[in-house]
Length: 333
Image (cartoon, rainbow, N blue to C red; front, side, top):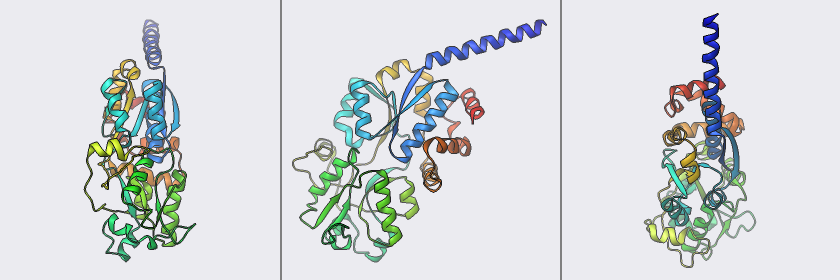
């Protein structure tokens, strides 16, 4: 009987500790960026934070610029797992320096990059098109569906941070005068759809994308060197990424960077253990690529993809957390 009472006391103590931890974690808002990898990261974070740390997580869906502006100006959401920062330098750097936001992880995904791409059969059929400079001289090879006399360059959907960069480079390379139109695909689905449609029909395609992504891997899209050097941080950050850059210069794409950022309030009150988890949370490029292909092939939403990742890649995510947290997450799968 004494052992039974002692057992109840221990269980009660553990329950109280668990309840206290839950109360300490409380409610957290996590940005769910509106593309596949952003969706995956957010849902994996949600699962681990809820199952492993007892948090109550709300996902906030949005694009790069909108999420950053909300965090910077309103202090919500608390966490942005995959914040592409190149297009936000002019506002992000001051926010980090002044302590409104904090970069707890400066490389959550390995092997990534942005730029301009063409299909592999285009590269094979036209070996002379070695750089963007070469391609820009031949708009007739990439006819626009609405006006076949013009070449179609597919940029970023409105609201994405890369939209201004593509607009600036389009002007810097004087593409309109050379016979091109800048196409807004409308959404992530529209951008993916334009690449898929072109590849399935064997049509040439020229435009913006990033890696690692399922669409790049599935169709073996080829990254195109720009044929010019990177213009430098000052002009890129003050002009190329701006909405109305008056005189953009020709440039290669800046080396891509992605941060996991948190608000100052979360940095101070969210718990050192959670911020440590976020700092250790790194997805190897091949793993992320494989997960994105899975999401595309299975039409898997972020919640299902998170379970697939946590089940299949235990050797990866268990290095991010303590053994105690890992056990709780495994028990919730």
